[in-house]
Amino acid sequence: MLAKEPFTALERRAVLGLASLYCLRMLGLFMVLPLFAVYTQELAGSNVASIGIALGAYGLTQAVLQVPLGWLSDRIGRKPVILGGLSLLVLGSVVAAAADTLMGLAIGRLLQGSGAIASATMALAADYTRIEQRTKASAIIGASIGISFALALVLGPVLAAWGGLSRVFESTAVMGGLGLLVVIFWLPATPQLSEGGRAHIADRERLGEALWGRGLGILYASIFCLHLLLMAAFTAIPAVMTQQVGLAPAHHAWMYLATLCGALPGVALLIRGRHELEDPRPLLALTVVLTVIGLVIALWAVSLTALGLGLVLFFAGFTALETILPALVSIFAPISLRGTAMGIFASAQFLGVFTGGALGGSALHVGGALGLVMVLAGLTAVWLFGLWRYGRTPMTAV
Image (tube, rainbow, N blue to C red; front, side):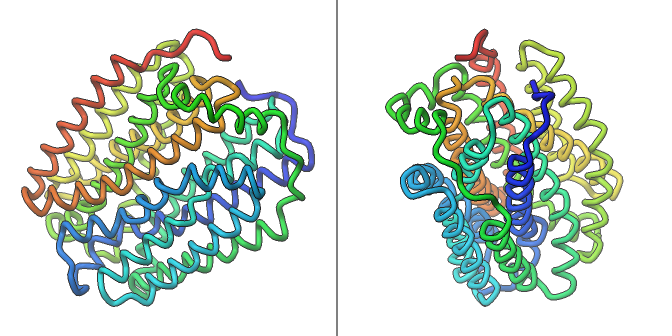
């Protein structure tokens, strides 16, 4: 439930600043998704498998460093960790922009991912806001991620048409610099650590409960699978658009814009359906199936109509799950473990990014589109079984 009481002036400033920070950071990272597989084919050392690994490389360092940097922010403060992470994002973007080999690009992506500040940023949002306002703050920050994803799919191809992949990475470095300015000049002074924050530190001893208790494990697995699908999709879809459908890279942005707009009514229906159901499993299963079916249709498309239909279904399912899953984590997790749970959730998400890039590229390299579809079908079967077996909502929150 969202609190009806408005934010205080400090809370409003802090939440808007953190939402802007998230949007700037994620916009730069998302912009390469529709471009990477097309623009890296001519680089030294590139093939379908290595391109997939390089695409997902930033997810590996994000996954590994998310929880340690969240822990470090408990010890030395949120802002120093966030400033350091944004500096690494800028450095990695500069390295990637200057790279003329796929290895150099992968190193840049690894450096970008080293700025793993999602858990520290969400912890800072909790520090700034009262308990009854935290769900609203999380919803606003989550919405900024969805907005950045939609903008990135349109803006990325436009920038690439202007100056290639290097221009996209240069723009990411600029956005990282703007994020530094937001932290330094816009965010209010960091408040004293709240009782909730102290409980978050103390409850590290309950890590097992945060990892699997109360149905949380399947939500972590779901965000892992969702981002695996996303990265696997973008190892193949740009090439499908260019080679199978005959759509020039300069026109990809318009296809993404049209299909994202077409997906919005479906996203709204799915999210509304979640609020009307006590048991989320049927809706989650339906959304997973829609996402995967849309991806399969897009992968096998030979016409603009089929490609558009596939992308509409894929974006509707993906965006709905991207909104629903973190909300369910906040419901499933005990109050004193929510900070830890969100850190684990972010790690699972970025591990899915790396795995999706590597697995999608390898499947395409070995078996083509059919091989990728077979891998995704197997993943979906396991995912749906896990949802039905472990996804029931806990009856109470503590």
